[in-house]
Amino acid sequence: MTKIIAEVCQNHNGSRETLEAMIKAAAENGADMVKMQSIWSEDVTKRERFEEGVVDENGTQVAIKRPYAAEVERLSKLDLSIEDHQFFIDTCVKYGVIPLTAIFARHRIKDVAALNWPDKWIKVPSYDCASYPLLRELAEHFDHFIISTGATYDEEIEKTAELMRELGKDFSFLHCVTSYPNTLPMCNLARMEWLRTFTPKFGWSDHTKIEDNDIIAAKVAIMLGADYVERHFTILGVGDTKDGPVSMTPELLKELSDFRALSKEEQKKHISEKRPDWEVMIGEQKRAMTDVELLNRDYYRGRFASPKENQTGPEEDQWLYNWE
Image (cartoon, rainbow, N blue to C red; front, top):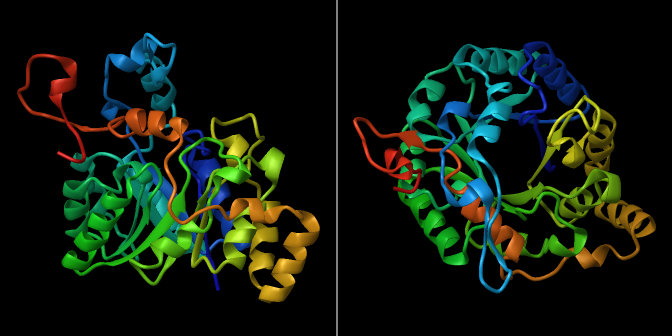
């Protein structure tokens, strides 16, 4: 049966009380795993092209606008300490779900990995699917990898699969569209079958907009045989957090959990009645990234990094990126 990963991201707003309530609600409504993000605001990198964004002479946007100071200020209110990480782990154990995290900067790996994880699971976000040095370091501490593949070129995914096999690690690939949100025609869920050629277990990390599309893409992924479905999760109002619009509620999580227990025939009947045009989500196994995904790859791949010691010179030269 498909395993459901409830991604709490920064929907906890930096509050332990909210974090525990989210984990409890996720467990009670069918989540098998709860994922946090090991993000520290001080690891945000300053890169000049994103301060104002860049538009070329033809009027085409070639870099998004995401000013450094504003991003640090926003994230600083959401930071979780190492002690908060252990609280997260202990709370997941308390409520009977598997805890996992995504570590966004290499210099954080040892401290996070040293915590009392009941199982050595790690999630690798899309923008680090091809960060091979990061993957090697993670493999020193974790046994089970769930790797998102959005905004990653096919040849990079192939190389990652080779590396995981070389390292002797259990790994699964999740198809993901790194547009926030992505529309149903952008889903290309057929791509899961291509990912299946590299590893027996595969799935879908869903960023469709709840208000427009409910959880239909996640349901179709389950019907198509996904071993994992990951969705952002919230117990707060849709406008209370940055990720609220792409986050499912406890009620929707329960609905998704109940759906996976149906037979394939029942699943297809339900989907066809709810969304007769559901096949628009199938798309192609191989597809080019959209302009939005390429812009997001440019920004998010390198958004966090590790500080180099005793470095001077341009700001961007003072960071060790995850792929270096």
